Image 1 (cartoon, rainbow, N blue to C red):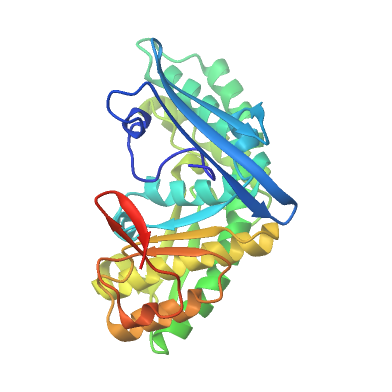
Image 2 (image 1 turned 120 degrees about the vertical axis):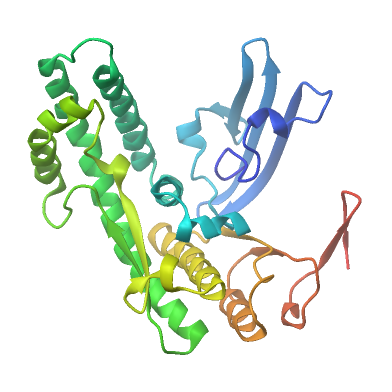
Length: 318
């Protein structure tokens, strides 16, 4: 909540407020490279619905200025959907990481999303869409869309290098796991020109299908194992290990690009790994600045960390 302004578990923000209460509040201090920053998030039930407020060092700020003050990388069993889930989940993974790294990325993402929404509403309208207005929306999409493509291309390239090294260390060997950017628009050259050309080339098709077909809102990530799709040819253990490698690579890449180490939150990550993979993973994260792992059993590989037991909603040191 203090890093991203939202829970990775609750689907509705109202679920974070205790039953019978009107508001929930969380605050904390984060020590980052620039010094200590005090963060607070408040969620309140109002007549108009749920409202959130943020402040940094006691001053009220908007969400864009709150995001990225502290950074976090999370893993839950649901993140296995990065392998077999819809492309939207992989885009969310990219957006969450890049928005924490760069305030500019978050602003461009918000601007792009608003224009796509307006363009899609025009195409779906009851009357024939006005071509000149559609072209105006396409022109407006080029700037923010190209910025998203360029940022994703560079980030995934860095992520791919980190994933390859991490997975090789854990597995010791044989198969090579890779991650690659799979853009909706070619991204080898100038993304501004490529997006502009792709939008122009598909005007007639979008008018016919009444749908926004071109742009980074249709991007994807490609995950492979030994050159083959991980979703089809990877075992459950291989898929889980690959997602863990992706998350650790996200951590390492975020730390390198920002100069700040994120907090690593790992929820039930070892439940389906064999002892060798679990040991390799824990060794890999052992030098990270701060990591929290949850498990239902205290495995031998947990030696060296501070342990807490959660019982009846109370936390106590073991």
